[in-house]
Length: 555
Image (cartoon, rainbow, N blue to C red):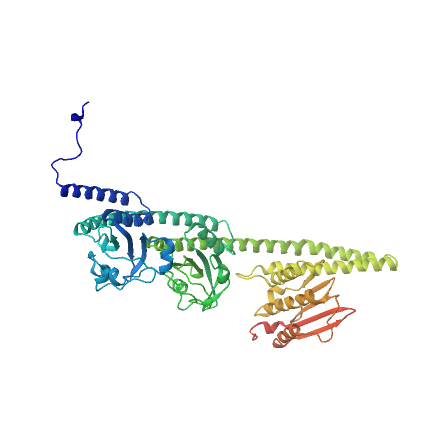
């Protein structure tokens, strides 16, 4: 093959202007290709800026995303390194010539910014910028943002540069729309996976920890910096019961007013709602600032269980319309799952109640009758033996009588079942005993006499639990006791709590603020509190209150 058979790529008749136009068209095609070949929105936005800079030879470039209120929601910049950006401070918000591009909705080309009347100058540490070109980027019929280019290598931007950047902006609008559709599809995919995971986990758990499960699964799967659950506390407050993510220690357990908060509005409207930011101290003093936040109400039927709050750091990426749509879907499906959980818990309670009733019948019809028969047989036998043997038999008869009494108490407890949404008094008292005496060398002996769960109500159960806690705490702190006994019994229309220990007693001059509090509780219920203490015999406290005062007595 000879050289004259090789076709030339260059047209010898082409003018320099034609060659320049060809190169610019080729550069535009390359720039457009680099923009549309990716679907990740963050990458697409940065590539638009880089392509514009390369296309017209600009030293600096940026893309400002327009917010709902008309300012700049985000500002993606290229050409200024991170240390310089940090020294400059906050990013532009859409004033001066940048704002003019937003309001005019048309390209603006300025040869010298210093002489431009609409320019407001630059902040300290900002690099010098002279020439400027700003072009709107349209997505469909809306302006998504503006592409800003400064410091043309040729000294100023030409009309041809403007035409190229306008053409690039048109391609950029298509790329942004595709990226947003991809981002929305990916968002729905993540939310759908989260919904499926949460629903599956909820159906394997009981209702006591279902809200914590929701928060933990959402925190693991959703792109957020903070996930929390706020539960109703009274009529006008919410409490942050579960918190995952940044500032969890500062937020956990805090109560705040429902009125005027995003979570309160979500709970009231039963709609998933969002805001762009929540300044420091909005909910309560010391609350850290929050960025974009979504609040999702959680209901079981008509009962408000709480609000799921998903937040990002201040200046974090906003939640999209797809996020809000899927959050609403999450709330609807979570409510259905919560209803299923509640129905399952109701069924389990009904089954437990039936089991209790069956055990109570068996104890009454079989065990007590056999013990009673054994007692009668022993009484008959005691009449036929000598005095010593008779005394021994009578002692065993007393044991059988005490056992029958304990079994009858157990039957009352079994027959009372479980109260909807609340623990029985016995369980609450035993929880307190277990909590305080967990590390003691010998266990506390606890006795219940009578159908306590059936008759103690109206706040009397709260007082009794509080008195048990106070007395056992005193024993743990001061008594140095080896054995402790707790007896709670019914006597006619009075409930009596006795706590005795074999410790060192209450020394003279010791502070008695806690004991004064329990005595005051007894006085308010028309009851009494007696304390007997000595270094030799230990301490015995007897706290009594009439049952009738538990129904409507002021606290």
